[in-house]
Amino acid sequence: MFGYVRPPLEILPQEEADRFRRAYCGLCHTLGERYGPAARMILNYDFTYLAILLSDPEEAAPCRRRCVSSPVRLRAYQPATAALELAADESVILAYWQLRDGVEDHGLWKGLGYRVSAAALRGGYRKAAAARPEFDGRVREQLAALSRLEGECCPSMDQAADTFAQLLAAAAAGVEDPVRRRVLEQMLYHLGRWVYLIDAADDLQKDAVSGNYNPVALRYGLRDGKWDEESRRAFARTLDHSIHMIATAFELWDFGVWRPLLESTVYTGLFAVGWAVLEGTFHKMPPREQRKKHKKAEVRRFSTVFVITSTSMIWSLISVISLLRMISLMHGKHSVVARSSTVSFSSLCGRCASSST
Image 1: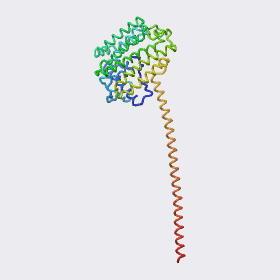
Image 2: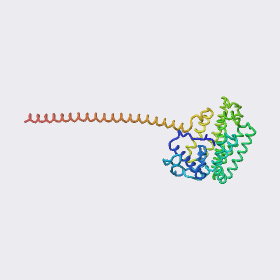
Image 3: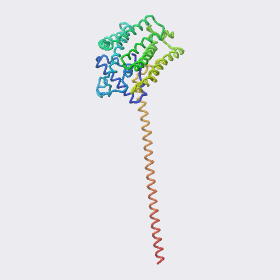
Image 4: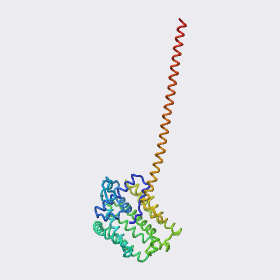
């Protein structure tokens, strides 16, 4: 997987952002517990999204513990569930074969990082493949088909994308409910197609320099790795079609508490990533910097609201005090007038009585 499938955390409510982080940390702990520390290095947003898709509609009660990324503060995370274990197994298999593909695509020196990572993950892969032999077999089959297309320099963008789409759709094979399995297969198929195409678009300039196979470049004749306006619009429509198909399948199932996260990713996150890749800005600002920028904006907005609210409360308090003081003064004047009237009336009565006598 490639890190393109990410929810728009910067605009999500805090409750949903925290829920995503619990799933993210839960998958990290599950990978570490099942396959050792080396497996944690494959953790990314894409695999977390897969774990959420496979999860039950209700979130399991979170646990809290310290870890390498949070050695002091206890951090909430999802405990290992059947869905997280399935996602962890399939993530290890996918990541291992992605690393092996990187070894094949690069020479000895440039592929050294892929070789070291694949070697570190090999033991975990063997265990995962033994636990999910059907999925591993499907991954092998589709990657072999993709390798043949690459060797032939197949100009069909759709044919190349179909292999990865079929591969990712196989991740739903372990789901027991047949209706839910069909929904997830459709979502994952079109998500796999979108991921493959967006990755090819992201690698246009790099592949133009290296000469690596790129079906998007072949389809639109982009030999220098640069878009022309007509090709960009046509390719954007292709990406949009995949997202619309994902959305169509998504609306057929109740994903429970995970719906806001999944919905925001489908209807906002994928479009935002696609736009950033086509504009060439996807790698210019890491997600962490985006979140920092958003947090600073939130702090500024909170400070402004606090100042305005405090000022309003102070003026309201002053107004209330002034009103009370005015009422008190008016009451005092009224009492004086009342006493004066009483005295005058008594005197008048006294004078009247004297006169009568």
